Length: 262
Image 1 (tube, rainbow, N blue to C red):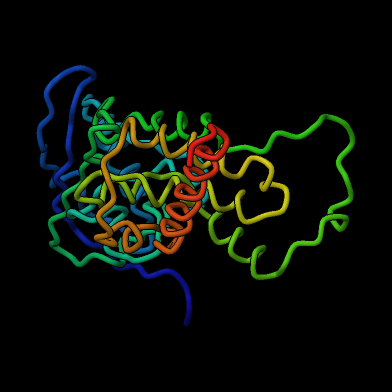
Image 2: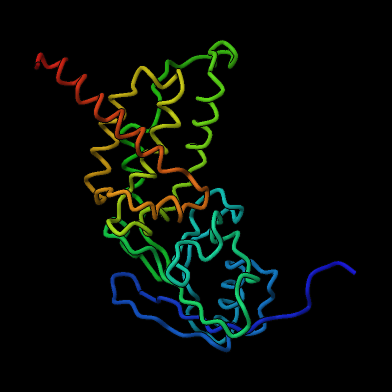
């Protein structure tokens, strides 16, 4: 006989609670985290805990969420020291409680990065990512009717690689996992999904310099630990960082030539 399991688990939940502008601390929830269905997602478990807190007249845990389908990237948090939790290639909203056992202690914290200040509890300000995109994460095109897509031939290898890069959901796991709090994987993905396509060539090097400089203003340097790739819920490869570094070096040479230097 198939169907959802009737078994439940009890966990001990340690959650970072921090009021706006105040000091944070870990708070333990035991009673509120009992009778959890293994078929629940991690966010659904937090919903249950919050319902129980509200019923007791207590402040619910603040956390971000939107699509709950692994697309928006807003649900990111540290779970037992791992971005998005123990399941590789999974956003927090796709992580299910079946990954935990009865009696497990679960520690939940916000992203820890200088560029991601904590706003409240598990919510951080990721607007530094927005400023990187604003610096050049777009293609300038004349207005008017869109041309037929088939008018611009794109090699399959380039299209596949661009799609792999475009899978980035800007969750911030790469930054949270990196010991240097670097955002190179995010920036490289946002660069290469444009730089690899014919439509992105006109502004390729200008875009690269602008976005890399914006990144360096807020985030640390990459020393290729590779933690970003392991933490990424979309399993984006560090190869894109190499492509970004290549384009940045080429951009510097082009800028020197334009300036009349030798």
